[in-house]
Image (cartoon, rainbow, N blue to C red; front, top):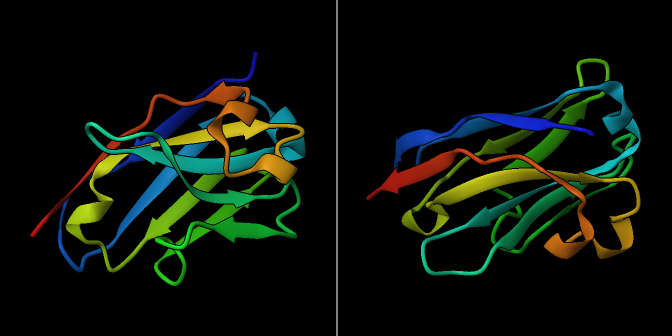
Length: 125
């Protein structure tokens, strides 16, 4: 059973930057599509970004394009999300997810089998 553990997150001022990491428990994740989702209070979980197994392809939600960067290091079994130009609307719990077959439905959380618990990101204005 693949396990995902995020780190990073915290409180940041508007306009600031933050980095999130997601460590996988074993190297099988190198074959998986991995993604980041977020959920704000009272809202549905929403797609943020996804990356293909060998990093050939990435995809971003419109709200993340130009501000967030997803990357992965398969040698270390770690997924990253770099967040810049943060604003209050980015306040949410951010979770990483993984699945071997999710690329064609990468923006839909129901297609990911493995999930981390998610750190809180709070942006103060």
